[in-house]
Every structure is written in C-alpha cells, then in structure tokens.
Length: 326
Ligand code: ADE
Ligand code: ZN
Image 1 (spheres, rainbow, N blue to C red):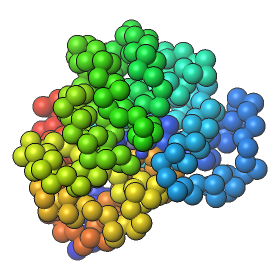
Image 2: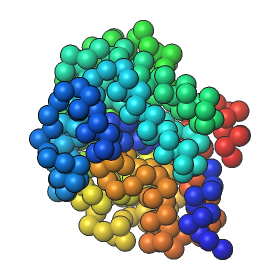
Image 3: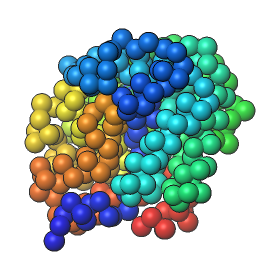
C-alpha cells in the first residue's frame, strides 16, 4: 500500500489559502517584467533565499511587497489560474480562497480589477477542471475598522462572487473585537464569517472571534489549546479549525513539524482540517502538507480520510456539491 499515492488520489478540499500567498517567485518575476516593476532581488533564487521568517510579521512584509506586482485584471487571473492548475494536479476538487482587497486598493487598484480577474479564473477552473471555488474577502486587521467598512462597501457590487468575509494579517495588537461592527454588517449582507485567531495571538482571540464576530470557522486556532475549557466548547460545537502545518513551522509558531500540536488537537476531538495558507512562501501545497504530516505523525488512511471528511463538513459548498465530494 502506497500511502503517498493514496493521499494524492483522495478527493481533497482546501479551506485556508490566501491567493496572494500562492504567488510563486517565477510568476512574481514574470509579472514584474510585464508591468515594468523592478523587484529588490536579482533573481528567483535570491528571492527564494529571502523566504526565511522568524514570525508572522517578517513574512507579511515580504508577502505585501510581493503582491505589488499584481496590477491588471489579467495579473489576478494568471495568479488564480496558476493556483487552480496546482489544485488540478493534486486532486484538490473544492477550494475556498482568501483575497486581501486592501493590499491592492491601497495601491490605487480598483477592487473590480481584483475580483473580475479572480472570478474569471474560477469560472475557467470550473469549466476546464471541474473544480469548485468560493472566494472569501479578508479584512487586513492592521488597518482600521473604517477601512474594512469602506472595503465592504466597495465590494457590494460584486457580492455574487463572494461567499464570506475573513480577517487576516498581524494578529498581535489587533484583536477580533476591533472588527465587531464590520462583521455585523457582513452578516447582514448574508456573508459567512471566518477569522484568523490563535495563530500568534492568545486563546482569548479564538473565543472572541467566535463570540463577538460570530464566525463559523476559526483559521489556525492552534493556541486554543492554552484554554482547556475553550477546547471542550470548540470540540462540542464541532467548530472547524483550518490548521496550516507548514505555515506554523515557517512562521515559528512551532519549531518542528514533529512538535506541532495536531495530534493533541485530534485527540481532543477538535474539528481539524489541513491547509496550506501561503504555499508559495511556506514550501508546499495542501498535498505536501498532508503527505508530510502523514509521515511525521504516522497517520492511517482512515485518519487521512477523516481529515478530508472534516473539510467537506466545514466547507461552504452546497449540499449537492458536498455529497459529490464525500
Ligand atoms: N495573510 C496571509 N497569510 C497569513 C497568515 N498566516 N496569518 C495572518 N495573515 C495572513
Ligand atoms: Zn492564513
């Protein structure tokens, strides 16, 4: 029995993927050239060597810098299309993709340019590969709530392309309670809600994202383990946690994959899913994360299937699509 082949072939879903974090160095250089931008790196190799991070902020600084090559609708199409090609290669059949409009609108790019490019790629991925995709608009938590509200207003003409609202960027100093109002507005608009919480920030951020932002998934959530009572409530409610193992290693949330608390999280009955976060920066896509975890933690095929099943249950796919994916 070839476990790696089994993991490759099983139907997979991804629920935590930043499209700007799927920008591979090669494409970054191609788009820079196309848009007459000079990158502060001499080569793809030099750029890759810079991908060593001591914390979330060091990564975010490079991630936002990298995103500056994205300027036209075609750039956003090409970005998303490259990601869908990896999904097709790895048998990821459904994906829920974050995008950060403020990273682009702050540079003077219209939100329509972003969303139209992404949506066209999604449409083509559906037609050509049979991949289903939903987009989740994320607010940058290092910016003000007013800026988040303005972003939600600007997105109103495009709501048919967006299934939910999320919260990402620097968790330290920007707790969920800062965004209560805009998440209330997102709920009014019929959007699903998710938030990064308990990645670098404390367990209280997980509890507050749940209670105050009324989210139906927690992104990362690993530090919930610091609050036993919270863990029990999350498990009882089957609150999905979108865990990103390679990300946690690269951003030094944990020192080595073998020290990742995934086994403890599963042991405690948490509704864990496995995801890649920013695969171009963290050294691998969903398949790579699953294969490495399976080796490191000696997971059985049943455990892999359970994790994929957790992702189906946690997804915002229609009931019909969920039954196709099961
Ligand atoms: N934006 C992209 N990746 C992120 C992460 N892992 N945490 C917070 N914000 C992000
Ligand atoms: Zn993330």
